[in-house]
Length: 266
Length: 162
Ligand SMILES: Cc1cc2nc3c(=O)[nH]c(=O)nc-3n(C[C@H](O)[C@H](O)[C@H](O)COP(=O)(O)OP(=O)(O)OC[C@H]3O[C@@H](n4cnc5c(N)ncnc54)[C@H](O)[C@@H]3O)c2cc1C
Ligand code: FES
Ligand code: FES
Image 1 (cartoon, each protein chain N blue to C red):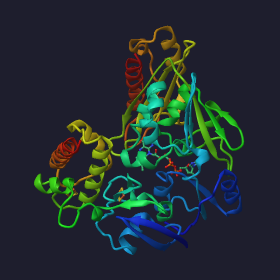
Image 2 (spheres, chains in turn blue, green; image 1 turned 60 degrees about the vertical axis):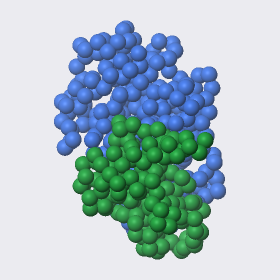
Image 3 (cartoon, protein in one colour; image 1 turned 30 degrees about the horizontal axis):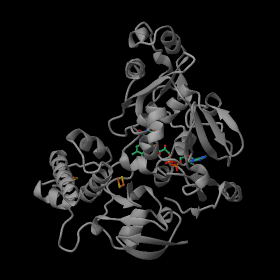
Image 4 (cartoon, chains in turn green, cyan; image 1 turned 180 degrees about the vertical axis):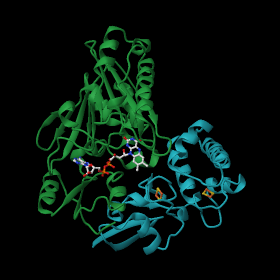
C-alpha cells in the first residue's frame, strides 16, 4: 500500500472540508472494499478521511411506511436489528448474506452503495424498493443514483448520509453467491408494494450493473407466483460474461433466483 | 505519522503509526504478537481475525489508526496462564488443526460466533459462520467438531453459573 494521510473528522462538515483540502482524497467507511483495493495498489489516495465514527451516519429509524438506515450502519447491524427484521425482514436477510461475519462487522451500507460494485447485494434492494438516498447535498431516487458499473450520481466530496426504504407488503431476496468471494453471481430482490405494484431488482448479472426487470414485474403484477415467470426469456446479450460464468448461464440464473425470491416472498 | 493508543489483551499501549499501517502489522511487527497470521492479500482467508471492541474483524483490512482507542483481543489473550480457553482446548482435543496456520483466526472466529449465538450452535450454523475462514489442510471436519464441542461445553458452564 502506498503512503497516505489519515484524517478523522469530528462531523460531516469537517469531513467535507478535509476532503476538499486534500490533493486526492477518498472517504473511508468500513474499508472492506477500499483497503483491499489500496493493498493491490489499484487505488492510491493521498488522503483518507475516515467516516467510521461519525454519529451523523449512524442510526436506524422505522416508521409505519419506511425504514431509514444511516450510511455508517454495518451489514451485521442491519442483519440483527430487531426493528428491521420485523418491518422489512427481506432486507435484514440480504445484509446477513453479504460476505462473511468479519466483513459484516466492518462493511457499511453507505460504503456498499457508494462503491456500486455490479455484484454487490444492497443495490438490488435499493432499486426494487424504490429507496431514496440522502446525501450532504440532496436527495436522490434509486434510479438516478446508480449509473453503471462502479459509478453513482455522487459528486466529488459528496457524502452519502442515509437510505430510506419504503416498506413492502411482501419481499424477498434470492442470491446465488460466487463460492469463493460470496459476491452475487446473480441476486434478485422482488418486492410487492402495498399498492400492488411489483418491482424487481437484479444484481450480479447485468452488463451495466444493477437493473430492474420490466418483463418480470409485469408478469408478477398479473400473477404473483413463481410459475408466472416461466414463459419469460432473459436476454443473455445484456448479461456479464467472465471466468465465473457465461452470459447464458447468468441469464438462466437470474430467472431461477427470481422464481426463488417470489416463492420465498409467499 | 499518527499517535494512537490501543488496549491489547488488557494492556494499553501507545504507538506512532503511518496512515497506511495495517492493524495486523502493528500487532505483529511493533507489538511482537505474531500469533495473528497473514494468509492472503485479498481479505478472504481469515487467518488475521482478531476482536476489536468485542467483534471479530480481519486485522489485515483495518488500519491501525482506525483502531485508535479500541479494545483489541488476539489469540495471545485467550489462555489464562497455562489454562487454555475452552475453544483452544477443544481444537487440541478434536485435532482441529494440521499445519496450524489458519488456527489463530479460526479460534478467534469461533469465540466470536459462540458469543454471538449465546453458545447455541448446530453444525449447519457453524459451517455457515466459517465462511470467512479458509483452511487448506483439515477439510474443516474437525474444526467444526471442535467448535461444536467448545460451544456445548460453554453452554453447560453458562447454565451451571445461572
Ligand atoms: C471477503 C469479502 C467479501 C465480500 N462479499 C460481499 C458480498 O457478498 N456482497 C456485497 O455486496 N459486498 C461484499 N463485500 C463488500 C462489502 O460489502 C463492503 O463492505 C462494501 O462494498 C463497502 O463498504 P465499506 O463500508 O467497507 O466501504 P469502504 O471500503 O470504506 O469504501 C468503499 C467506497 O465507498 C466510498 N464511501 C464509503 N462510505 C461513503 C459515504 N458515506 N459517502 C460517500 N462515499 C463513501 C469510499 O470512498 C470508497 O470509494 C465483500 C468484501 C470482502 C472483503
Ligand atoms: S490475511 Fe487473509 S483475510 Fe486477512
Ligand atoms: S490447519 Fe493448515 S491451513 Fe488450516
